[in-house]
Length: 99
Length: 99
Length: 153
Length: 153
Image (cartoon, rainbow over all chains, first blue to last red; front, side, top):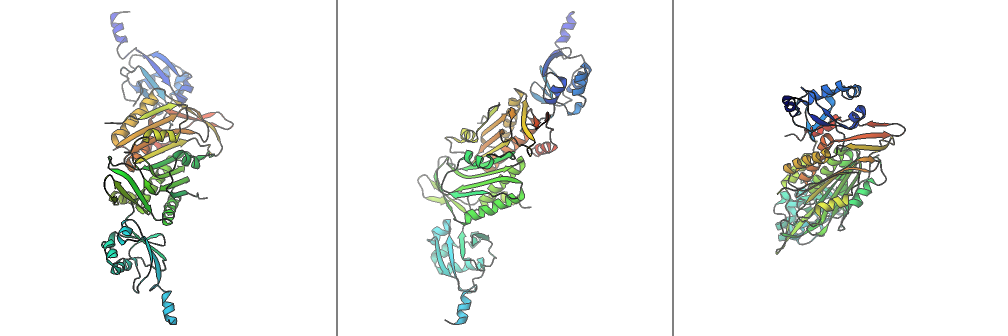
């Protein structure tokens, strides 16, 4: 591993994040949370929602309508244009139905 | 007493009504209720509010601003143009401040 | 199939839990209960007590007419209005409105409507007993009349 | 001098009398308390239970952010939000919002605002268990989004 590769692992690419899934997103993906390394180029919420389906059938099925998926970065709602920045916990879920 | 006088006592003039007073109207008139005979010609709420002050100082004082006085005929709010009709209980009071 | 409101005017205090249970106990069709409790404030320490005069008979009937309007206007499953009279001290309850419905907006709107009309049309009058002085009648507020007007269709 | 809201997310039930007392006990400056209780309906006998999933941590934080907005917007003297999670049967409580203020309109508006935003932004999801079938996730309602929009200034 070169010095430059180590440097890039602390930037916004190739870094490890915790993903959490709720409600039918959780059921379709089949797990409630996991830690993954984001590919280079996955910089925004939109990027993430279009990259995750490449990881397998269950992801593709859960996220086939990316527009309806809500995302939270470190416990705060984020819109799809928002950069993931240094978020360490990213949650994906359907529109809320509490209250 | 003639037959015609008896007939007129059941019409809208010279008939007995119970008057009730509340809050500062009651305090200023000095009594909470009384039964009085209405003069001929006292046909509407407006007539009543302008006739009562002729009965004495306390009435004149209580009703010196007739526009602010609210009136209920048989437990129902009435506006000043309304005929007293056959109301048997007429209440006079200031604007309500409950709730 | 119209509901019958529970209406009480008395010196007696009320209890939120009792009144809420009166509306919901044993039911599985109610999705929302909104309660409004009006309490006596001490006006920054100046007020020693409120005296609430009312017109017996008309008070209950007028509240009944306001309640009937609310029941005709919103799909309510229960409605309670309790107004106290007599002497009330700071911190004590004055009035309770509780509205139950399948959905939240009807319950909120009905309770708010009831309070606006209670203020401007139910025959109650408040006298404030301030510390070290005789009582003074509370004046009606224009803001209460304005609040009532927003319900006119 | 801002108030601190009382916020709780748990499986535990709540009690209206307890929560109302938490806001008003020993106080003489509160003139109005509005409570909203959301209950589980049986949908005409079809529903056997609701399952309420939530995002622990974010749920409390998001409710806290909504409560903060309400506290900044209205002159509140107390605010409580309790949201249950887990399995809830018809007739049981789901959510409570209680708002205290000197005057009625602030208490009504804050409670209504809180409920609209809880519905659309607090991370909770309802699954309906219908009699004789597997659970189905409740779909978000456009009417809830519309209700939220009316608070945008």
